[in-house]
Length: 126
Image (tube, rainbow, N blue to C red; front, side, top):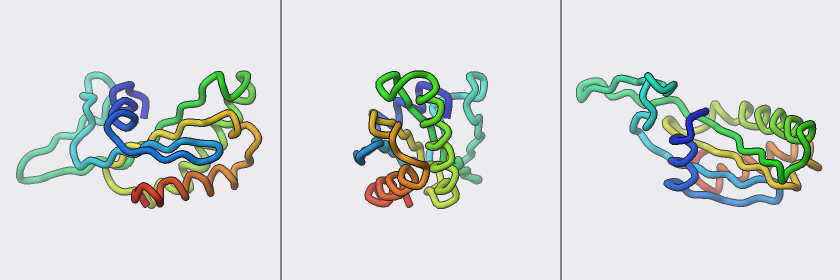
């Protein structure tokens, strides 16, 4: 996910659950992305006869509060790996935003994956 509109839809229009190192925001929808293809969105064409459900999309928020650039990139890589491990199990059309907290800098990939899976399960996205 790369559009600020999709991030806002998940953060403001969805539900969230906090874990020790991350906060998971999920918005489930069978509608198309609010971002048109001309602005970099998925550009799905949906007709009344042939409804199309977009694939789940995941975005990351790793702010400077997590640490310096090296730490932030390391955390982002671990979160991407965690998201990839659960992506096949997400509901179609789900918008997921994973926001890293300062404690994420100290966690390994397995711990972040466990926290992500726990949060998504609590929100009903898995």
